[in-house]
Amino acid sequence: MRRKLVFSLELLAITGVVLVLIAMLFPGFVDRKIFANEASAVSTVRAIGAAQLKYAQLYPSAGFADDVAKLEPPPSGMAPSSAHAGLLDFAAECVAQPCAKSGYIFAIDQTSGTPINKFRITAVPQKPGKTGFRGFCSTEPGVITADASGGTSCSIPIT
Image 1: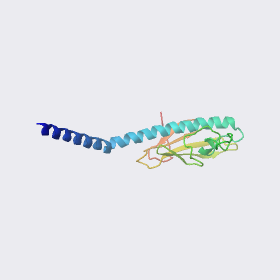
Image 2: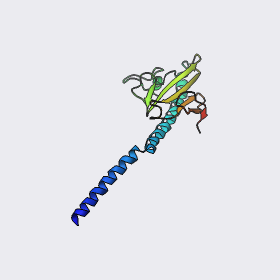
Image 3: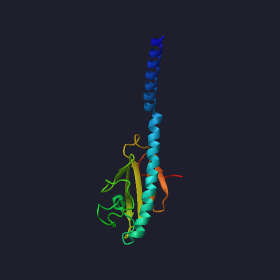
Image 4: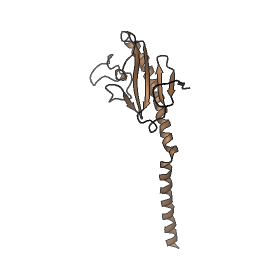
């Protein structure tokens, strides 16, 4: 009787391990990670947009920043400046764009004007289909749009 109980417990444990492995390999599990990365990307695009508005207020002669790294903290022991405003610290190792975070690559492009009065923020998956499905864009008004193919041809509004 004791042998049957031990065998049943071993079988139950093995079945549990197999079920956990199947759940991890199930595509829905990967999709959840991608959706979390996409939500993080949208949030980061919003944060970059807010930092851009603050940057333009602090440095009116420069206008908006033309590089995500200009929004990052200054090197240790240095005061904030237009080169490192200290308004954003999501990618501390980012010394020049593009900057990576949560499976996405972020950049500021399409800048124009002197001082810079137009810009676009882009976020594209580092590995399309694995770290994210959609690309995201935003301009100075703060409207975020998406590109279903994972690029920067954004035309689908995000609500």
